[in-house]
Picture 1 (cartoon, rainbow, N blue to C red):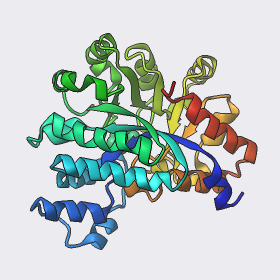
Picture 2: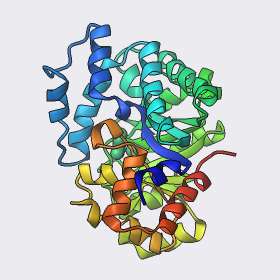
Picture 3: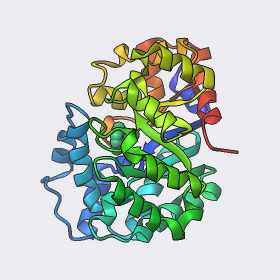
Picture 4: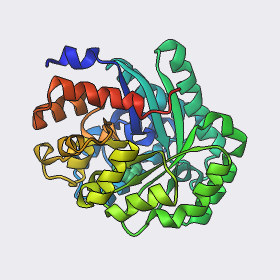
Length: 317
Ligand code: ADE
Ligand code: ZN
């Protein structure tokens, strides 16, 4: 299985935070354009800071980097840079997250963020042959009321947003906290997903399914600790959007060779491979496929399953 073979496979990506695709070069370019000082002397020292001990240590730097994004053009350029990268990897469909609260809490208009992102996604259909869905993530370290206000702000842009998700610091912020806002999103016709079981326990995955009524679980790797949950996920064919390089960078697994992705596949789960925050975790979708295959000795048949699952688990009609 050489690189050209991986590249030749048409792929879908379902777990990608646009703010996590901000490469240090672009972060510095945008910061300069906006007259913002990043707390790093140059691109190299920013890249050097990408050593994480857990999810929170990453999020602290990720939210700092996002401060460079200010104008509609910035959000457009960020999105286009990601789409250009993955178009070259033969990615055909993407479902991407954005964190509006990270920006609106700094005084940036909701419309500035969503219009910039949406324009780039929309152009990419014809220019790059990539179809897409946009997913608004609520920050779970903030109160549910703030998520409710964000959902309200999204109303005029409803046609540009396919679904809602839940991200940020998982431990101590169970899905239960967001039950009402997800119910409201369901009434408004949004598709629903949630991060659960990345660092949090299997009970958070149950809550995401039973209280938030999500169609997919983002990460979900800790489901393996609960055999009843694994059986449920398999029976209902609820997809997990697994992000192998992310899990190693954030110390969910010590090495890629220790990742439980193959075990989860062997238990008949609908597993997909994704990149999460590629600018921070050392690889886009293709690198996730290539390195995971090598570390876990996945067969050609298993790679095909992962690729097929990506399209099956997507919201693509
Ligand atoms: N936001 C960006 N990446 C994330 C992750 N891996 N988990 C939770 N929130 C995130
Ligand atoms: Zn994520």
